Amino acid sequence: MSNNSLVKSKMSDDERLALAEKLDRDLDEFIDGLERKRYTDGWPEDRWEEEMDKHPFFMKKPPEEGEELHPLLEGIQQLKYDPMENTEEDLAATYKEDGNFYVKHKKYRMAIYSYTEGLNRNFNNDELKSALYNNRSAAHFFIKNYRSSIGDANKALAINPKYLKAHLRIAQCHNLLGKHDDCMRVCDEILHSDPTHQAAIELRKASQLSKANLSRDQRKLNAMSKKKEDALNRTLMELNKRNIQFEDRKLNSPITETLIQPKLAPLEDFPVSLDENGLLVWPISFCYPEFLFSDFQQQVCEDVTMIEALRHLFSEPLECDTQRKYRPDSCNVYYENRIAGSVHKINLSATIKSIVSEKRFLVSGGCLIFYVVPKDSATETEYVHKERNPLVKTF
Image 1: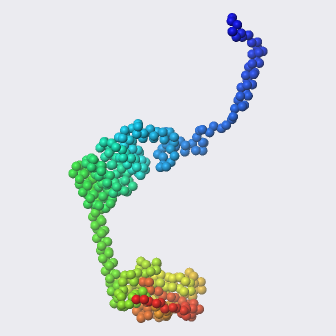
Image 2 (image 1 turned 90 degrees about the vertical axis):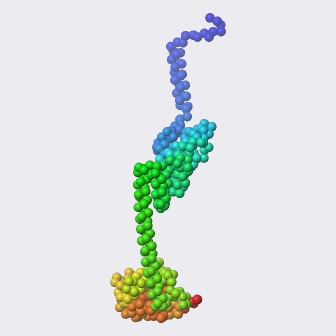
Image 3 (image 1 turned 60 degrees about the vertical axis):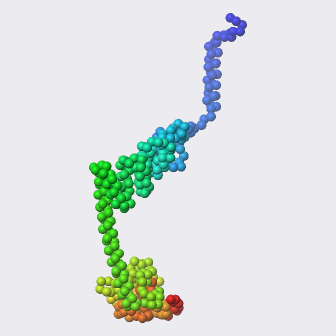
């Protein structure tokens, strides 16, 4: 054996046992010396479903606009839309597929964006281009952009005049926009190409019926408007004939619709009107100075007496009248002439017509205003003797 050779002596059993024990101790020390830390690269137990939904292999819906993308999905997208890896036509087809996916999931605005991106590609495939326009027309239709839908459908037809889907959608849009003549015209164009096209047949019938109903409703509306206008003119003629005084009426000017429009919100939909018997029906405000609130009677015929009006008012006690002082036979009623700064007591047996006809009575804010106080009370004394400054009326 050469002198350079390593001479191995045979190990005794004791030496072998000692070496094994040393190796065991070294292994234990190595394990004890390892840094024990919790594994954190997996999905958290309380959020594993959320994390799974973000993973491209498991997600059930597309990411929301502006949402951070999973790195794998981002990589796939970069490859999918890479102009170095795809032709312009490939990219247009990809955006069309994206748009179809968004339409399926009712993300119509995202679909419109995808179809638009496809149309922005520079390619020469007319079939693909017309499909992009038609599909974008459909997406606009679903979010009720009917005019934009018509525009895109017409662009699709300019490329492919036989595109019946685009034709039908234009007809649908016209129908929903109330353009029934246009709808029926487009349906007729479809039926000229395909006389058995069931959707066009049904849409034409529906549009024709809608047009008839619309015409009928318009006739009714016109008749009601004419009736309302005639009633207003009769009312104004009666008021002018009687020369009823309005607080804000200019000297010698006619009574107009503006003058009779009630200014108080609870009465604003009930201006004075003339009934079929030639009687005026008035909106009235009954004010209670003691409680600083009012009762509103929207339609009171002028042949009603003031005592009858009070009986109606007090058929149930006033909620704030804890002492039950307000009864038809225990109250007085007044009206004010604010131009003169005066107050006038009303004969309770007088009718509304005779009260309004008094020379000093003024219709104020389009309605009749009366003030109700308990007889011979401190409230009545205070109300009657309250200082009132005359209004300065300009003409």
